[in-house]
Length: 210
Image (cartoon, rainbow, N blue to C red; front, side, top):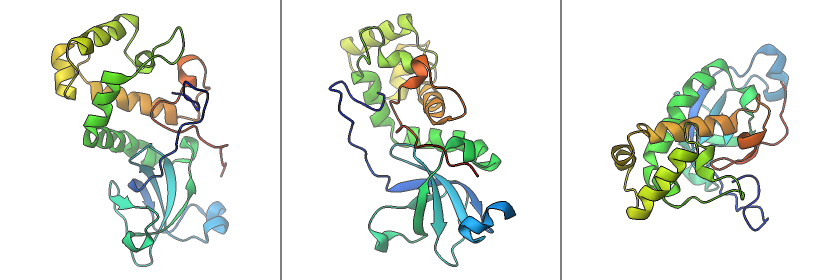
């Protein structure tokens, strides 16, 4: 939901263990930023659990490829490519390449975790007395929300394909999730109305300007 659950408590934040590389800068950022990281190689990436945008430092001698999935968990001995997670990153600080690659990375993550997001369609509930969390998904209004609820009451959805077949108006449920994730990550747009809720990501920290 947003940064609190229905009981008014902050939800448990799951640590990212894997991330997809969005951009790899072998010489670091532009000159004006080199003082911060010493012109060392740096990668921009997105976590596969809660879509956390991150800056990563690769190990010496390791060249990363865009759309590589890399391990970033606490077990450092398992980190074969990443030396250190430098910190979180806001959308506005993504490079042009990262913004282009973001769509592909999010869709790959959603499709790889299909069961998780199909479960969302099957089990998600209201975020307030007037708003259902299904309505937060771009393209789903009141009518489609009730269509989904009625369909899942008859039989839980089994896959994205099952959703699309039973509800032709939802031809691309995975794409709908992708669009919502992008909305939640976009720190350049004021968060009002439906956009104030976070259902798939964590609220960003204060922006770090370059």
